[in-house]
Image (cartoon, rainbow, N blue to C red; front, side, top):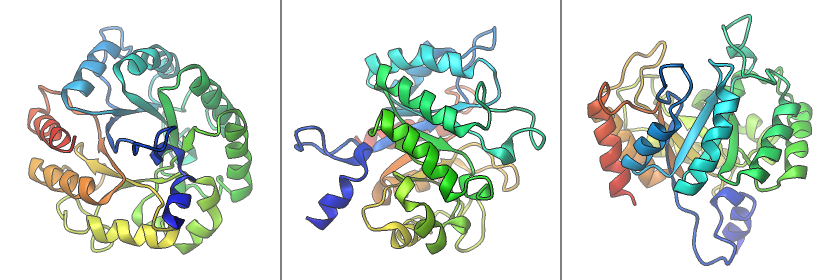
Length: 284
């Protein structure tokens, strides 16, 4: 009964309205959407590829194009009809000007406005089920508990079912983070890099242990969604297809969901695309 009560705190992962069926585990890809010649997102091709790899979720990054917000609103009704759930990821201060080239447009670093706008959009388009902030725990000077509590309250007032699941790395996930921020989180998006040993994209053996450690901090029922590096990391380099396969398998077994960083092209990135397709199909 205690575990059931905890699960009810995390509506994205709870049973359906009748309590009869547990929510389907997340199998999704992130960002790197295919583009049309005019640089807008090719939403039809994206849906086709998501269905082909047996994904049930797509994490939409709003960052490098001013049209990302508009394209999201074109994608959502199509995703709903296709049975694809959608997350939205925004970038924080460390990935915005002057440190980086682009903001998340149109609201930039005004996360109260983002929280309100996304919650309102999620009521119109129920395929939108969660939102995230990238590198959240690297930006705690900006994201004080008081500020986070304020924008989460604004979001939940409009739609209590819209989940907030920020991206946090292993070395920043600790008892202090949990004690200060757990009331505002509906889970953590956890990019796996074997940081408990030595950060790299070759060691797939630490997935379970690192997830267990995160749950020790936040609670056994706290959702941890594993992010698997299929695309190269800026400093750790590229992963191999074999590594991607091993981490997906471990994530399916031990995490509350699996995302692929990033969405893979079926031609240019064919080996990893096929592995994702194979492993997501096997997990259905």
